[in-house]
Length: 483
Image 1 (cartoon, rainbow, N blue to C red):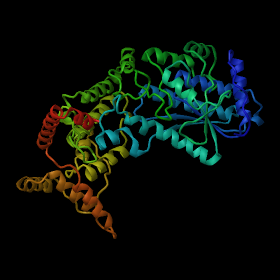
Image 2: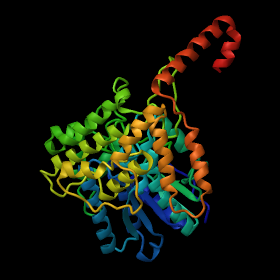
Image 3: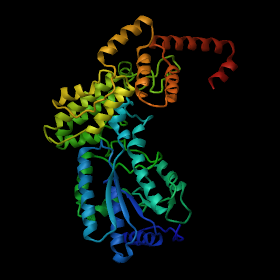
Image 4: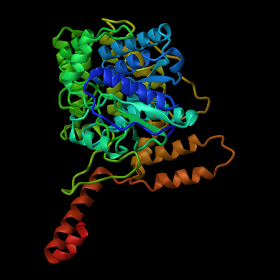
């Protein structure tokens, strides 16, 4: 730390909050990073920081303040429009007022986007037990920017609009890395990052009272924000920087495609309040949520995981894993149809990018044995357009080869997917000078579990019967085996 901190004191008035912010800003020489989601809490924190620094002479505003907003690329469109406008206003106002503030939007890398993983790799729709989306869509993007700033400046202060009393878990995390008697806390997972929470003791009423009674310094309308909350009957989606921060869910502003919640009451409320054009989004989201119904999984999901392993439950049933290629194709078709329906209202509206489509196509061909190269045909059938797809100059198997191979594999009792994967391994190593890695790839493929579903279920039932007999004969040994 550049200098010792002032002891923490309770803040009863806005002037005291502003003065504390100025003290923290003066004490440390490293930049600030403010997480801005566009919701009430992050807006309050940013507005207070802005007004506090505006009270300093221009020559004292020497530390840059980076305002970052995470866009998962599947955010609720109404919120995206609001945040985009706010970020533009922040940058324009900062230049006009000589404020050291720069606002920017952070997005996941192509490999981490929702559609590349859901449709391309076949990841199941997120649920409360498997929120793979939070890490890929939010945490990585924010942490990447924060660590870049740490690498450049040594340390940074991360300003978060989080408040005590929202949940016991959040309060516990807020206390975990707090230096007793001081305002800053060490970040638990990002070295060189210090966390500052200027509104941690504000209540919800404090936040709304402040926002409705004060003017936005960058020219936004806080009444518009209040109207968004009323129309969505919702809370705000926080900037997520680690797994301990709760993601949206619970009908908060966030991803329109979120299946963690049982119902998207926020989007339902927006539609009821006049945003009828969002109906196709809600219908797609509800259809995707139905894939979590156990009764639907056998027809939609693989019984083998992407790692080639097969898992069974205690009752001898199969734990279904990623979506099948056929169902992924259906998801893409429905997504493009949803996009087309909304384009009747907004011709420029886009749900999935061309880069994502190309990456999904590559994954289907390279990793999921889509020898028919089905994606371009699906895209053209729905949209009536075509894209400049990459053309591979290496001769690769196609639909005819897949049909012949299916007949040969069935005749010899060999799993079709096994032979296809082995051929794909050869294809992926085509033209390489060193061929050592191909042997490891072949060995890995051969060591995957290639039993048929009937074999898996039969083996599971046999093991279940054997375990039952063992428990009846040797109860103590069986107990140990269960452990």
